[in-house]
Structures are given as structure tokens and as C-alpha cells.
Length: 181
Image (cartoon, rainbow, N blue to C red; front, top):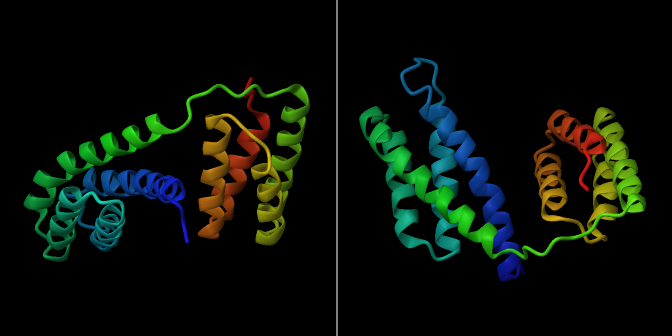
């Protein structure tokens, strides 16, 4: 069973993804090829996730968006999406602010370790080798990292969860070349 901090951590990842998906679809609402089905699925997922963390009012707003999508009510989607996304973004920011803000020093040795593991993830993703990529990611999770590095690790984990190897590879390669000092 997930603890409260794990639940909030995964909620933040899901909510950030939902913000991207819903915002992207919202920006293309008047395109005849807009993917309303993805809008409905994402709103439905947020409805449940919000309910799980006790955000009943925002969950009701997600339900309204889900129903508007099912009914293809573009006017209602246009009206209700921006305030929902703003509230969801505010909630994500509140959760992130509650995380430990202490600075973590990353030594040169840790940076070399991080780069090595990120390159292993990159190469594993290029081979569609989920098991090796997850093993390298699990190794990274054994160390204490800054929030920025943890965010990258979490994003890669989500990409691997969904077998989005190309996105995981790009992120791992970028992380291997970043200076997190």
C-alpha cells in the first residue's frame, strides 16, 4: 500500500501529465481532428486521482470536464478547462512546496555515477530493454539526490512505465549531459 507521501508524489506526476494533455487538446479544440477521447480519458483519470487525495471539489470539476468531453460540448470545455488547469497547477505547486526544500550537495563522484547510470538507461532504452533501464533507475534511487535530479528520475520512471522508450532515452541522455551542481 502506498504511503501518503508516495500517493502525493504519484499524484503530482499524473497531474503534471494531465495538465500537458488537457492543455494541448484545449489549444486545438477547433481542429476537426482534435483527440476528444484522450481529453475524456485524462479528465476521468484526474477525477479519480483528485478524489483519492481528498480534493472533492476539483474532482467534481474534472467530472464536469469528462462529461463535457463525452458530450463533445466544445463550449463547456472551452469555458471550464482554463480554470480547472489553473487550480490543478496550483495544487501541484502546493504539493511541491511541501516537499523537502533542503539543498543536497552533489559531489563530482556522484555526478560521474549519475552520468554512468543515465547512459546505461539511454542505451537500454535504445534496445527497448526495459529491465536493464529499470535496474539502472533503481540503482539511482538508492542515493540521495536534489529535487531536480529526483524529478528527472521520476519522469524517466513514468516513461518506462508506459514503455515510452524514446522519451526516456532522450531524457536520460539530456540528464547525462546536464550539470546539476
